[in-house]
Image (cartoon, rainbow, N blue to C red; front, side):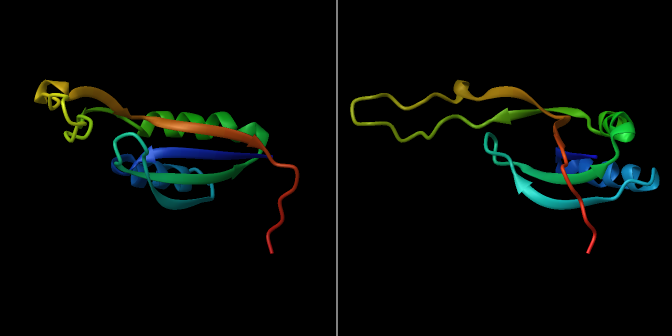
Length: 111
């Protein structure tokens, strides 16, 4: 058995969860926030038999879409004597898709 931990964007989370459920996968979803852009995510915990891991990954891949966002510039307060950061410091970054961890489960019990 494997535990899949999938971190997906809020915009994709509902679609991913529904697709997983409609394919017979059980999951737990909780809301999280990214550390880089401080944007909303959902973390999905999915317990799955080894033979179904690729099925789960295919579903996640099919339902998580990349997007372009603007990363905010660093704080504008600078130490005395340093010029402020210019608005050109804003960078366009690709976000979305998913980050997935797959862990071996030694034992699982439903109580």
